[in-house]
Length: 208
Picture 1 (cartoon, helix red, strand yellow):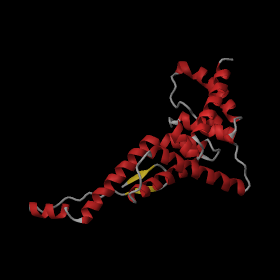
Picture 2 (spheres, helix red, strand yellow):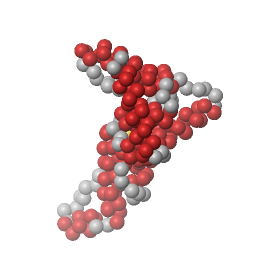
Picture 3 (cartoon, helix red, strand yellow):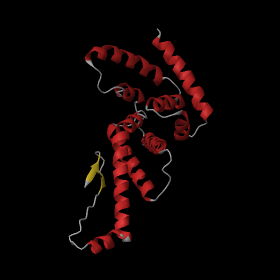
């Protein structure tokens, strides 16, 4: 049994070995619909675990950028991968799964934030952004300059309109313009203009 992260999603792996030495018995078992289903399920589990290893940290950072608490962000990431498992199990499209995963996290994070606001506590987005680690392992020589640069850039990002914040954060996670447009539900032109404008501001800030 494999546990994905800390939110309580479990994926069971079943491995059956034929005890009979009769080759015809093995062939008969391998050809049954039940065994084919088990093999397909095992492949899906491996694929989900592979995506979890690859995208867990970027998704967690993105969820945190909405100003939600760490434990809520972790739950959102867990729910994202549960959704991915069900998506693949139902045989739905595998096209651009990276963009699909980020879109699910985006929608869940928005839902969580709106729910918290309705229950009365506006979250401190700026404080969360200040704690967000862009580079988890800088070397000692880079640490001071990185910290200073991060504070300056995060302060600049923090005052951007939210749509521009989402665009630059998704771009920082490696998504292409078309994927960002899909995640945010905006046009490709909007993403291009937003990033051009934001990057120009960041460049000017770096030159000061």
